[in-house]
Length: 139
Length: 299
Image 1 (cartoon, rainbow over the protein chains, first blue to last red):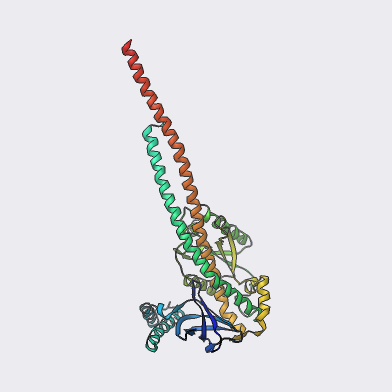
Image 2 (cartoon, rainbow over the protein chains, first blue to last red):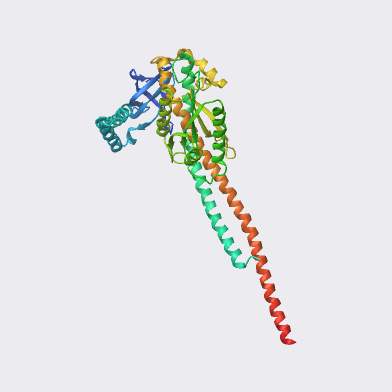
């Protein structure tokens, strides 16, 4: 097995993850990418989606990220996200409520609706819900 | 001479005040810890962000984003004034408002229109009194619990207004938390983003940059990356300003309340002295009466 690579997921409010991993998969804007130890220095923006990583014991973990940036260095991946949550910490009910709210806003024909924001909110909520559902079935 | 009863009730009054100031001091102390923790948890993000941003800014073109380009003619300046919602924190709000006022006059003298976004009641009330143009107000943010989304939502509004040409410059007036003893008010330019901000100025960072800068692969292009990062930089700056102002507010209140508690102590001491004196005087008077009465009877 190759050497481990350090993964750090940082949000403005806290460190979400800081641990050694075997592999990290992240949702880049140009497609999902995987990082192993010894990766070329690499910088990309991220979309809303899930980061997957396998810890040193080989267990897989899922983390929701709401976009941001990732910097990969040979021995370290840093993900800067505006918000990030581990699968265990995602509040499914809240995401569902947010999804319904966004849907209502998009469906309504009021003129002052900020479509871009509502859509972004909807996508975040949907991704959170998918992670919870998908995560639940594979484990 | 003040009667015994009056002095006594005054002492009690001051004691009650002391209890309140002491409690407020402790509340401020515990909130301060919370605010400081929030500030500390933001540091890793802010540092990494500045590093990455400096990195890309070095690679991308100079004029990739309208957020970076200073306007040739500055007609409308927008000031984001951060103050607290509540008083009883010494000169904290006054200092901030004075700073904003000085800055505003400087701009107004140059014939520029100035408008405000207020965070905090105190600044809003001042703007109302002075009949200044207020665009937006956010209450219950400074000094309370707030998340990054508060900063990003309001910062995005500023960016939109800047891009649509409503403002030519955006500045934020906030209180920098240097230490428990010093929280000077400062003015910082948010938009257009100052060049120094986007290229990390410290020597170490520059060296570090040189170390791995050439090998970085960027996806999508550096220009596109920079374009998505710049608005976030504004969020980061505003969030930082909010955090520092909150921490400063609690520190200022803690100090003000500490001083007030001390002043109460002094007052209680001098009042107790006056009380004892009055009591002594009353006793002496009574004795004199008794002695006088006895003398009269004997005679």
